[in-house]
Image (tube, rainbow, N blue to C red):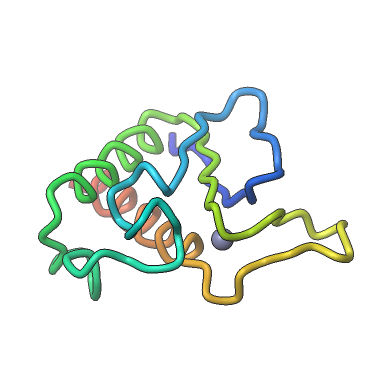
Length: 112
Ligand SMILES: [Zn+2]
C-alpha cells in the first residue's frame, strides 16, 4: 500500500494521521524560504547532487511506500484550501513539482 501525499500552506493544519513535513527543512531551498532552489537541486531529480536534499526526498518516498500519509507544507502559500476565496498562493510554488517527484520515485521503488 502507498500512502497519500498532499500540499498544504503555512496556515493549513495537517491531517490528524499525517506526517507533517516542512519544505524549508528539506535542504532543497535557499535562505529558509521556499521560493528559490539551491543550485544543486535543479533539473531532474537524477541530476540533483545535494546529499541532504536527496536523503530528505528518499525519506518521504519510504514513508509513502510504508503507507504513511504526508502533508508537505511550503512557506510561500498561505493556504491550499480550495474553499477559501481569498487564498494566497505563490504561483511559482515548487511544492507540486516536488510532490510529483516523490510520487514518481515511490512508484519506481515499489516496482523494484
Ligand atoms: Zn507554496
